Length: 235
Image (cartoon, rainbow, N blue to C red; front, side, top):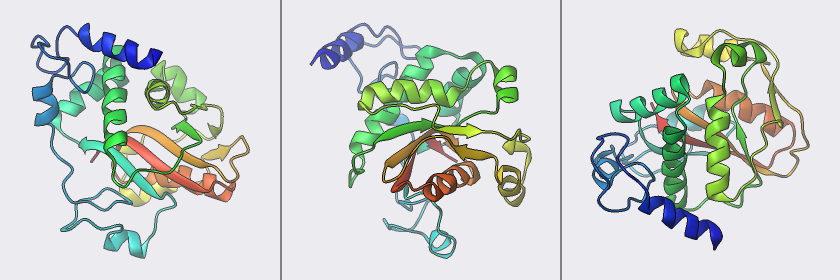
């Protein structure tokens, strides 16, 4: 009750949309994003429920997933990657903008609750971990910031210490798909008892899915029941 009251109060205090900078005349379903900008975001359309890539019909698994099934069960994402969502993600990743973090977490919670069929009960949200060297360079783990905000909206615990990245890797964006998989091999480890748990990994964008799949792999090998991926955007 208290959270619902505070949420409605926050909505009444929204000043301007973080995208178009227009005055927020009416409360929006996503904090910091006006109704016009929210509805202008590209729709997901038909996509594979497991990996999120576009398909010709609403299907559980695309041909690629049937041939090379990922370790994660399903992804939930807000929108296909687009210039508007890119602006917001850059504000979070490069400038640690907490207003954008709150917006993106709210957008992801909005998408999570609209998911059909709904996901089963989740026991934990885990941010994608950063190696300590990379964390010193960046100053903050944007996945952790996002996961903490999202955890409050979904009332699901966020456990940043359950996963560890123990091997420093080169940035994924500079690599091809096969190189990305090799780059992440044996880079992550599970540091908690995840047996029988339904877990969701939280991140901003999925491109090839190599990071999500490698993390899901170590979690499933550690005994997790299912692994889901919660994302802002699918590229």
